[in-house]
Image (tube, rainbow, N blue to C red; front, side, top):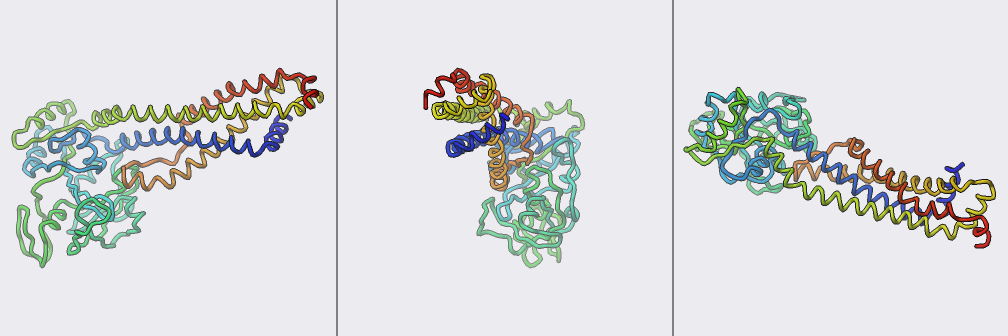
Length: 416
C-alpha cells in the first residue's frame, strides 16, 4: 500500500519529481563515471605488460620511457644503437630481449617494428601470451600483423594491402607508397595497446626507410640487389623489453645498463614505473572523486528540499491518510520511500547515461590515450558507492520525514 501511495504522490508532482530525478541521475553519472574510469584505467595500465623484468631505452624520464615503449604515447628523445641492443641480448643474465622501433603509423594507429620473439615472449594480463585469431606472424618481406582493434575498425582481412605513413599523426603527407604491406595475421583482443598496433619486422621497417626502389636497397648495415629485400639489421631501435633468466639478478643488470659506457641508457622496472604514475595521478583522482561527492550531496539536499517544500501542499493529503488509519511511523516511512524511489530511478538513469557515454568515449580514449574501458559497470566499487548513496538518502530524507511525522491531524484539516 505504501508503494502505491508513494508512486501516486510522486506522479501528482511529476514536474518537480522529474527535475529532482534528473539532478540525481547526473550527479550519480559523474560519481560512478569517475570511479569506473579510474578503476578501468588502472586495470588497463597494470594489465598492459606482464613478465617483462626491465624496459631499456635512451636516458630520459622513467614515465616517458614507460609510456612510449608500452603504451605508444609520446615519443622517444633518442634511440638505442643496434650494437648496444646486441650486447644486451647476449648478456649472460638475459633470457630474451625484444627490440621495439616506433615512429610510423597507419591512419592514426602506431606501427611497431619488432622481431618474431615479440609473439613468443610478450605477455599481458596474468601472464597471457599473444594469440592469432587468423593468419600467421610475419615471416615474409612486407607482411604486417594487426591488432584486433585495428582490424575491426579499419575492416582489414588476411591478404589485404595497406600503406604505412611516416610519423604518428592521424594524417600524414609522407607515405611509403612504394612499399605496401600485406596483412598476414590478426591478433586476438587483449584489452591492451597491442589491440591498436600494427606489427612489422624490424628489417621491413628499415627497408622502407632505406629507400628500397627498383630492387635496390640502400642504407642500413647491408646493401644488396635482388627481386626481394633481404633482412636488414637496423641502425637503432627505440626501446628493448628484457626478460631475465633469474629475477634475482634484475637489479644488478639494471645498474650495469644505467652505467653503460657505450651510450647513455636507462633501465626501468615496469611495476615501479606504473606505481609512480598512479602516485602522481592520485591527487587528480581524489579531487575528481571529492567534486563528484559534493555534486551528489547537493542533489540529495535538493531532494530533501523538494520533499519539505511540498509538505505544506500535502497537509490535507497527510490528514486524510491519518483519518484512514495511517500511523505516524508509516507516514515517516512514506516520505523515506518516496526519496528512495527517486534515488533508485536516478540510479537506473545514471547507469544508462554511463553506458551510452562509455560507448561513445571508448574509441576516443583507446585511440588517443591507450585506455581500454571495460563494459562491466557493476563492480564492488560501484556497489559500495550505491550503498553509501542510499544510506545518505535515508539520513537526509529524515528531515522532511520527521516533519511529516510531527504533522497533526488537526493542523492538517485547519490548513484547508
